[in-house]
Image (cartoon, rainbow, N blue to C red; front, side, top):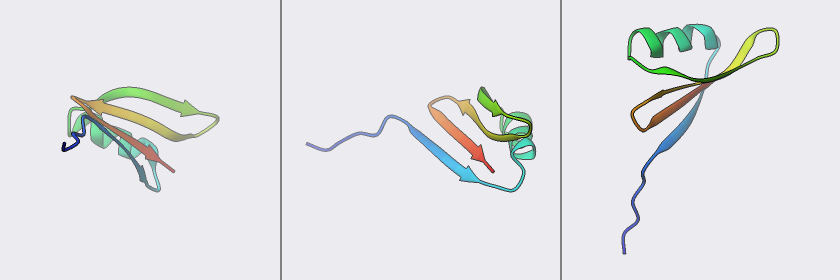
Length: 57
């Protein structure tokens, strides 16, 4: 029996989570799933359909 993948949650490293967040939301029509903010946003999540992407500093 062959398996089936229903969803993927990718963590993508970058230098600027805020700009990545803006790009996914305003250019690719993702929406906010969550954000973690101590003093500076370093980890967040955006979602569209069955795709989660987590930009991380």
